[in-house]
Length: 227
Length: 302
Image (cartoon, one colour):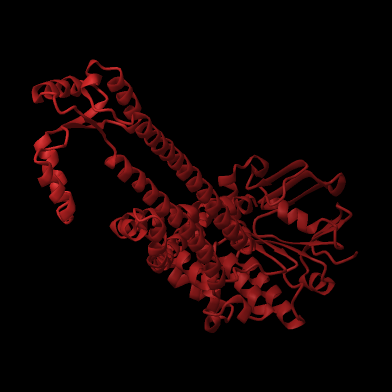
C-alpha cells in the first residue's frame, strides 16, 4: 500500500490546466524529488496533498484514504501527519524558536511535560539550543529553516513535503538542510522535495519525478535533473 | 483540560503583550466605544429619572366649596377610590389646609397678619388624587367634570392641567423611545468601530492564522486565544473607560445641572457605579469576542 497515491489528478485555475492527469505514488520511507521549471505544478501537487487546494479531477489517497472525501476535522489530522517545509519558512513571527516548536506539539496533543522535554531536544539536534528564545526576526535564513524542520519533526509526521526549502539559502545552509532531510529520511520518514536546484538533485541520487507544463514527463529511480 | 485552559490564557496574554501596538489600538478604540455608550446611557437614564420625578410630583387637587359638609367630601372620596385608575386619594380638611398654608408662609409676616385680620379660615377642603399612571389623569379629570358632584366643586382650570399632563406624557414616551434609539445607534456604532479595528488587527495576523492551520491546528484551537485576547482587551478598555468617565462626569454634571437642576448625572453615576462598571465590562467583553470571532472567520478557511 503506497503512502501517497495521486490517481489521474488534474488541476485547473480559471480554465487553464496547471496539472494534467498526473498519476504517481510514494511509498513509506521513500525520498522523492519533484523537479521542473516554475509553474510546472510542483507546489500545486504539495498544496493538494495537504488539502490547501482542491483537485479539479482525479483522486488523491493518503494511507489508502481518499482525501477529497475528508471533512474539515479530518483535514487537521491529515496535516498533523504531513509536515510542510516552505521556502519562506512560515514561522509564527511573535513566537520564539522554542514556542514555534512547542506550538506544533501542542497542536498534536502532547502534554506540557513532553513539550518541555522534547522541544529543547529537537532544537539541540539542529544546534539551535542557544537560540531557543530568539524570535524569527533574530534568526538567519538557515536557522529559520532549521526551526521549521524542528517544528515538522515535533509532530512526528509520516511524510515531509519540502517546497523549495533551500530557495532562500546560501550554499552552506542549503547543504545543511538537505543533509538534515536525508537524515530524517534515513530514520524512516518519507520526503517529497520540490526544487529546481539542479546540483542538489544530481547529488542526492534518489527518485526524481520531472514535471513540465503540468504533466509528468519522467519518473526515474536515482534520477537526474534533466530539464 | 487544565493544560488547555492554561495554554489559551498564556497564548492570549502573549498576544496582548507582544503585539503591543495592535493591542493598544484595539483597546483605545474599544475604550472610545464604551465611553460613548456609557455617556449616552447615563444621560438617558438621568433624563428618564427626571420624567419619573415629574410624574411623582403630579396629582389632581379638587377643591370643594366651603359649605360642602365633610361627610359629603369623604363619601365622594370613597366613591372615587373604587376607580381602577386611582392609586391614592388624600383628604385635606380646611383646618389642615390652613395649617399647611401657615407653615409655608411662616416667613412672610404680611400673610400671617392678613389671615389674622380675616378672622376666619378662607381655605377650602380638597381631595388630592394620584393616578396609577399619568395617562389616566385626563380621563379622571373628564370623569370629575361629568360627575354629579361637580357643582360642589370650586371651579378649577381643568384644561390647563390637561395640557401639562399631556405634555409630560408625550415627553416621557418621546424620551423613552429616543433613549432606546440613541442607545441602539451608539451600540451599533461601537460594534462597528471595534469590529473594524479588531478586523484590521487580525488581518495583520492572517499569515499566522494560515500557518497554524497548515500545522494542523483546529479552528477552535486557533480561535480560543484570539477570543480570550479580545475579551481581555474589552476588560482593560472597560477599566480605562471608567477612569476617563469619572473626571468627565464630574466636569460635565454641574454644567448640565445648571440648565436642568433635576438632572444630576454625577448622582446617578455614583449611585450606579458598580452597575455601570459591570454592564460596561460585559459589553466590552462582548465587543471584543464578537469582533474577534467575526474578523478571523474568513482566515480559518485555509
